[in-house]
Amino acid sequence: MKHPEPIVCDPADWACIQKVLAGDYDSFEELVLRYETLVYSQARKAFRNETEAEDFTQDVFLKAFEGLSTFKGRAKFSTWVFSIARNEIIRRYRKDHPEIEASLEGVSAESSPDSSSTQESNLMEKETNEKIRSLVDKLPELYRKPISLHYFENMSYKDISENLNLKMNTLKSYIFRGKEILREWLKKENETGKD
Image (cartoon, rainbow, N blue to C red):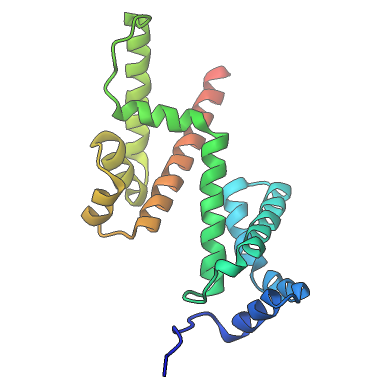
């Protein structure tokens, strides 16, 4: 007799999901009501704007609804939805803020000599790199170590996760959050510099 794979998902959630997959789409509303607070609170931390957080929460549940047939119940539904939200936050962050990504990537790359580069631009780049390094030093250790290893030591995520004994998703979220803090600090510095 063949044993089915164990279902880790909460039985009430699993029953709901089976109804939705059988065509009872209204049952999905139960899942939304159960977990929208979890997604919304994550969105509020990421976006700091109620309207954007509400729209984001709806988008996440739409993605969850569209991908529901891929959910096999081997994790809790809340964990699965949370990972959709986290991945979507990271995707939007990279799209909306390429400048901090570029600044941080620039720190790890050797300054390549290019025809238009002058002493002045090299000096400005050096100042920017030093500013970012000094800001990274002020980060909580939780975020500072992964960011320093990745951007200043050129270590891969895989090596860092082994080195710091962190799960890959945890590591990525630490780096994401650390970069978010850096971006806020740089923005504040730029604003105070204009006064």
